[in-house]
Image (cartoon, rainbow, N blue to C red; front, top):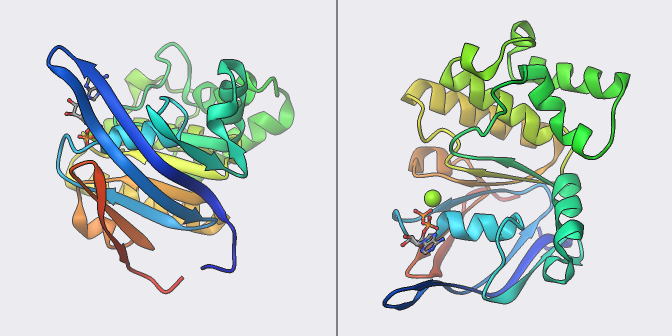
Length: 234
Ligand SMILES: Nc1ncnc2c1ncn2[C@@H]1O[C@H](COP(=O)(O)OP(=O)(O)O)[C@@H](O)[C@H]1O
Ligand SMILES: [Mg+2]
């Protein structure tokens, strides 16, 4: 593992939220290095700061102190438009609730990150179709989100996250609102696609059985990393 350079490094990452009763210290100094191609699960009790941590890793939120380096870029040094562009090219997100655009078809939703990057044309359509086939939805291209089951909507969100071939895929309890079977098959799908393409994949999950399939499990407690469990020998 140490032979490869880390794709993601955090240094003394701190996050406070202002509240009426003073600053709420959610992250109290997190140092971690994650390597290209690793699958990482983040676990910890509800409210511990898992989503906060993931949102900062994905440059959706800024830390109070400390820094995040991804692919050699210090993301704190990017301005808002630089950040948006970096996120679009480098990071794929799968949220707990899919955030699909209801007026657009599955195919259009998957193409969206490419369109935002001002890529259009035949190869974009072909890639979006291939990704929808990869997630088992080749027969649902023209369905709108409202015409798909919850599990299918999340599969569309997975395909969308992979559209721009991001180095880093982040997922925040992506199956939080699915039944057990749909949840397990969604996790399996994310795992398989990440492994197949050698992408770095960080997933927040409360399912410990699924977490054990990761390469490492990062356990958060009281604003810090309580323990990093090495699962595989990768
Ligand atoms: N925007 C915010 N303002 C104030 N407090 C917040 C905000 N977002 C989250 N929190 C608080 O920070 C803590 C961590 O939240 P979160 O990262 O969502 O936890 P988790 O994902 O582990 O359940 C919680 O106590 C939550 O109430
Ligand atoms: Mg959360």
